[in-house]
Every structure is written in C-alpha cells, then in structure tokens.
Amino acid sequence: MSLENFLYRLHFDTENARPSDLEVDWGDAPLTYKLYRGLPVIPLPEEVPLSLVDQTVSQEMSLPQLGAWLWYSYGLTQISQSLLTTTSADAGSELFLPLVTNRRPVASGGALYPSELYVYLKLSSIPPGLYHYDVAHHRLVQLREGNFDHFLSRALGGSCPVQACFGVAFVSIYFWKNFFKYDEFSYRLQGLDAGVLLGQLQEMANQFDVTTAVYYQFLDRAINTLLGLSDDQESVYAVVPLSLQTEGERHSHSSAQWTERGEVTASELIRELPEQKYVQVMRSKRMRKYPALLQINQAAMQESTHSFTHYSDELESKWSRRSDERILLPRLQKPSYDLVQYCRERFSPEMDFIRRKTDQDQVARIMEMTMSALLYGNDLGKNLEAASRRLSLFVSIHQVEGIQDGAYAYDPLEHALYPIVYGDLRARLQDGMTLDNVNLYHVPLCFHVVGNRDHLINQLGFRGYRIQHLEAGIVVHQLLLAAFTCGMGGHPLLGFDVENCDDLYNLETEEKTCLIQIPVGHYRPRARFQGVLHG
Image (spheres, rainbow, N blue to C red):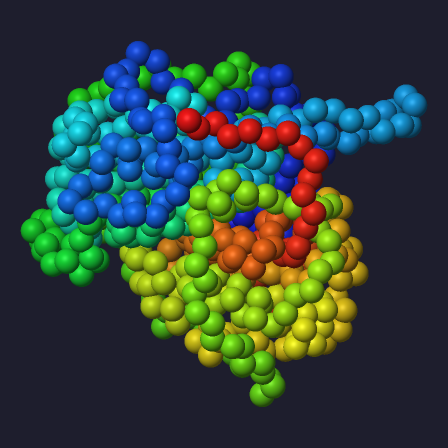
C-alpha cells in the first residue's frame, strides 16, 4: 500500500484503518509511562505548589520550579475511578464495571498518553545533560551527562541558538502505547496527542515567564540516538528550546557559524556519540508489528539539513470570503484564569453535556483565544495570516444568544464569523458520529479544526502530515482552555464522518478538510471517586 493511500484511509476511511475483528488485549496493555532501570535518578520535590502565582523564573529555574513545570505539563496528577456501563450478553442487562484511570493535565485519546517527555538541562542544581521525565516517580532519569549545545545546534540546522537556552524539551511518540488499541489509526492520534502536550508546555512556560519555540525540522536519527531511542519503537516529533531571554535576544546570538558550514547529516552526528544502551520497561509481552507506521515515520525523517524546508504561505490559497454577510464579534480582554485549577478540573464530557445559556461573548472569547495559539514561535513562521492558511476554525452553532443557528467560518484577522448555511445542524452532526458517546443535541458549539487537504505534503513531504496534526493539537489544547475560562468543557473527537463535515462547510472546493471535531458546552459532574497524587 502506498503511503498516500495509507493517509487517505486514516482520514476518510477510518473504519478500515483499524481491523474490525481486532480484540484489544488489555491484560497485556503497555504502561502509559516509560520506566528505565539501572540509571542515575534525580528526585524532584514532592511538594508541588497549588498555585503558579509568583513562580516567575528570574536568574535560573530552581529545582522546585522545574518539578512544578514538569508536573503540571505531563505529570500523573490524579487517579480517578468511575463506572463503565456495559451490557451482559447472557441476561441482556446492564453491568457496571469499575474503570480506574491515571489522569494528567492534558487530554489524550483513550487516556493512553503515547508521548514521552525528555529534557536537556543546564542548571547549577543538577549535572548538565539529558534526562527522561519519569512520570511514575516524578523524577529525572539521567541518560547522558555533559554539554550538548554544539550537537543540538547542528541537529537543528543552526536555526536555534542552543547556547543561549538553559534547556531543551523533546516530545516523542512511543508507537506501541496506543497502537495496541487503535492499530494503524493510532498514527493520526499520535500527532494530535503530542500537539496537545506542546500546547501545555507553552502554556506552562508562559506561567514561568520562560521563552519557548517549537522546532518541527531536525535530524531525526541524530536526536533519537542522542536520547537513546530506537527508531522502530519511539521517535521525537518536536524540539522545544527553553530560554529566559526574549526570542529576539536569543536570535541575536548569531547562528551563522553553523549555517556557513554547509550540509550536516544525521550519520555524521551519530558517529560523534558513544553508544549507550538502556533497559526500559513497558510491560507488554506480546507486541504486534506495525510496518505501516515505521514506513511513514521513516519517510518523514530528515537525514540532512539540506532537506529542511521553509513553509511558504504564498503557495497557499488566500482565505476566501464566503459572503458579504458577517458577524463582527466583540473584542474582549484576555480572561484571567488559574491554570492549576484547569489542570485539576480538566474533564472531557461525553453524555454529560447539558443545555444552558450560551452567549455571543463566550463564542468570541473561545474563537479569539483559540486562534491566538498560532502566534507561537516556530520554524514555520508565526505570522497569524500565514498560520491561518495552514489551520482555520469552523463552528456549528445552536441556540447561542445573538447568533443565528448555522455553520460558520471564523476569520481571526477580522475577528468575524462568516455564515455558510443556516439552520439546526445537530441531527446531521449526530448522524455523522461513528460512536454515539456524545449527545450533540445538548451542545451549543461544535468546532472543527480545518487544514489543507494535502496535509502539507506538497510543501513539507510526509513530515507535513505530522506537523499539521501537531499544530492542530496545539489549537485543540487552547480551545479546551478557552472553553474552561467560559465555564464549559470540550471533548475532542476523531469518530466523525469527515466527508459529511467537509460538505457541510463546502471545504472540498478550497482543498481543505476537517481534522478534528470538538463539541463544547456546559456539563454536569460525573459520578466518580477522584484523588490527587501530589504532596
């Protein structure tokens, strides 16, 4: 099967992206976190602050601040037990089974958390080097000791002044962690999951007044080898430098000394590293093969810095005004919110949505705050107009004060909604659900993050698909946070009829497609036992 057909099936033929007769072996399920054995560890402070106020980093990030940043980015924050309703085949009666999950500050498909988080740190409180964030024990596991500025600068093509940063974060995907349940469909989930984590890392950096950027282009095999990752198990998807300088100050450190050297290859960098092997634990004993994932991951890799490509928005079509009619949304002050409270209360409603008053101001806040996520630093270009050609936001609205029911396109530059079709669209959206786990009749807002139908492959090759989904994940994270500031919740969904929604918004004529669906509304608390996992 060609890789183009593989991606088409993931997006438009999702039922065949996962075998219909697949029986998930939950008894052999992998851990949702990675464990190392026999390596030096640095425990992080067990007492995590209950507020991030006054946590600004001044001269250097302290160990307690580092612990709080990692904890609220990707730590095991809660354990939750609820009841799973199922039907007995014998008696035809309902059974209630206990469902225990470890919760983190970010959303993840099936709560499987396929990402792992690594950091390169240069702090006086710990030896400089590369570390894995051991989620299960809230500690750092040392992978390599030493200064790797020169190595990382070249692996990033000289575009990032690593020497001006106090650290670098790496977000990877461990393929088996959600392939065991979702099979090949996991490839679509993985980019979105990693993108949501990137959004949380940036939000946490803002809380500490740390400057970040996201690098999507780097020498994959070199970075993976540096971290001791096996390409057939795990691969880094994004690199995030951390600095106490502004972005302009960081880039005032000239990187020309690297770019002038010409081409750098992954093979050349790998030869500089002493080989290191690690013993790791993921619990599964019987792992199925996933050749399609390995094939497309290999096709997306960059072997040479000459393969790095600048995304050009000039090649993309302009945002087309669909009608002269529009709704100018009110410009509101950015809301103040407690990120710790969001991390503690984050919840993905399913059958828990309830009808409650929703107004135009709430829609305006969610729209503006969500699309502001695309103003982050990256190696693609952070201009909002260019970014909005890669990703855009559409919404189907029902019973919102001041807005007529219908489907709308959002223009972030004008902060305006453009109507596409009027009417109650709930039945159409509900019929397009492949799994009736959300009652859309109780949802006033159903958002769709929309991207290029070619998944950026024409410009960025097969790496474009994962970049598109990583950015979509960042947008989804911000949308969920924006909904929280309005007292609402959202449930990201891939179980929807993409072609139905593309037709609803007339996207195919513009070579666009819906990437993910997020119903947003008010919800009732679910009956569950829940406890925090910090001191």
